[in-house]
Image 1 (tube, rainbow, N blue to C red):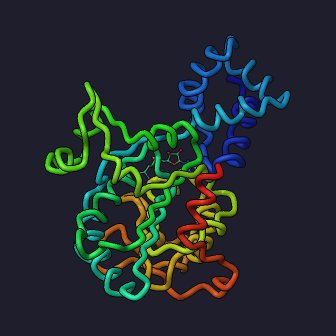
Image 2 (cartoon, rainbow, N blue to C red):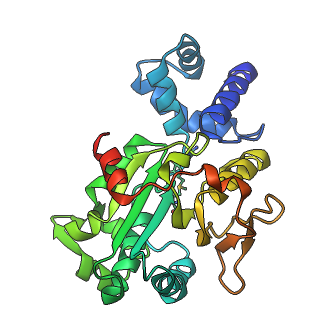
Image 3 (spheres, protein in one colour):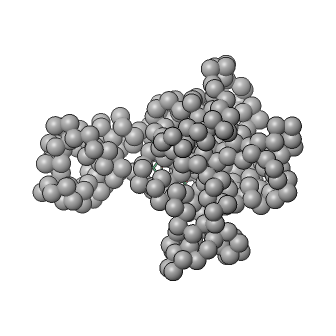
Length: 292
Ligand SMILES: C[S@@+](CC[C@H](N)C(=O)[O-])C[C@H]1O[C@@H](n2cnc3c(N)ncnc32)[C@H](O)[C@@H]1O
């Protein structure tokens, strides 16, 4: 790949998805995009770039998608999910006793292991949430991963990564070589395509936001901007979960780490611009989702 082609791809990926590639990542781009070029009937990356420059929108979307990292697994990092079950959900159950509803956003949900892990944590609360409206909104940039997540179907390999056997038996049904999440768990998760670089205030406010292992690919300014906008989406007593290699420290003052709760963050103060955020009721959210 020529240096100008790499510069073009770097700029485009940063603008379209936030992906911040350092100057020495040509090998990564080549290994991800060469198969795409071949699949599109093109001999190599120069021809792919040429076609992209001529305004092939669908091809650009495919390039962006090919460059995303979709690695995920059930109950990834374990500890945030333990906190969710043991402290966060019980505290919110008390705090929302009058409202009897809980909203969770799983941003950058990939193929679904994360939002369904959250769903299993909510299920584990049992009678405490009986009759409540619980919503998990799962979003991602990539239509392909969302499509897979919607099916709730996972391979033997995928269910062996992080999922306790008791949960496999309790919440999944075997279908040949695959396992499908039971309909009640699947129904707890609504899927929507969403790019974190774009406005997401229309989603309304949430009690819990998971935004894990995606900001790690962005530069400081992009991360800071997203943290600022996430802060306006979180209820004052809500919780933000980040990935094990991610932190707010040195990037934003909007959140502070929860003491003794690794991976979890709370608002430092309620952002002044909260008045501008629409709190969308669950019914309206369902209507929007089904209109897609
Ligand atoms: C490494 S996976 C993380 C999945 C899950 N959150 C976890 O921690 O296991 C990163 C996901 O972020 C998504 N992604 C990348 N850039 C994005 C963007 N700008 N907006 C929304 N999602 C994005 C990718 O499509 C991918 O599914």
